[in-house]
Image (cartoon, rainbow, N blue to C red; front, side):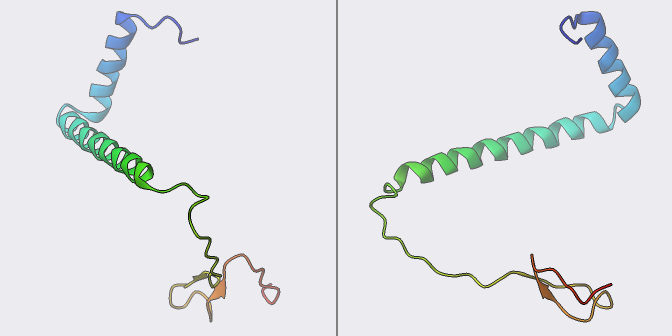
Length: 93
């Protein structure tokens, strides 16, 4: 369906985008997109470096700690109390 996208189609798409979003907002949007991509790239690089420095899983000592159940705090006036996530509330109608 979109296999043959030539120059006339691309130009038409760009004209429609400029008309929809306006010429003033496009540079700001492109700048924000560039910053986001730069941040994403640096974060993935940092994750790769952190992963390379870790010891294999078999060498680590396994420490199991039980975490308490998470609770959701409702906004004032929504419900009378907080309840753990994942547990059904049978008292509600």
